Length: 256
Image (cartoon, rainbow, N blue to C red):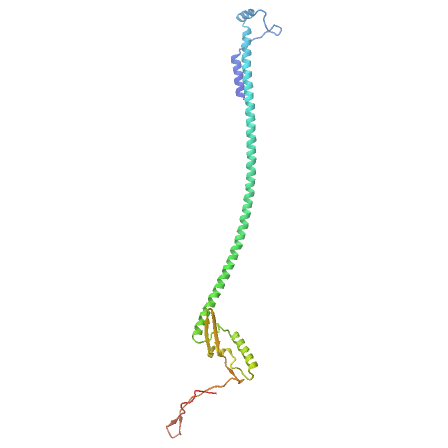
């Protein structure tokens, strides 16, 4: 702006020569124009043509100045509009940043909640897995015992795994009650479950997935168990002076 103003002043100084003017009492326009031409030649005074030329230059400068002011005004409006648009975009950018910050905060809170939920679910999964492992171990243990019991059953031995002692004792008591009610004077002999595990006679069979065991339970009219004796035969000397012996042969091995 200052440079253009200085260029304008320099142009005026270059195009318009500096002159000396008479007092204001002198008439601005000569009655006889040729007198001015003579005065210009003799004394260096400005003529009417010179004044017209000066006015033309001044009008040209005025138009240029007006164009320059219009351009400045137009550019000033454009610049103001540009600043307004930049300010609007900047405010929009700040609003977007704020919204993104809220979104990120919400996402962070959601991730924290999801992490806590995931940790809890993982802990529950671990507990469930441990419980399932324990249950699986127990099932394998029961299957192993069932295999052992099946082998004992096939070998002719009543396994306690299939018929526990308390179940066998309850069964014997129920049979004892039935026998004493329906057949007075009779009772189950013996009543100790250990006898049936060692010497019991039974029949085992199955149908599909069901296993059936028929156990023989002795019934007697004696309240006390039988006393059985094993008979053993030994040779006996006939007398002290003889070397011959006598012995009882072909006798029973057991007696009551």
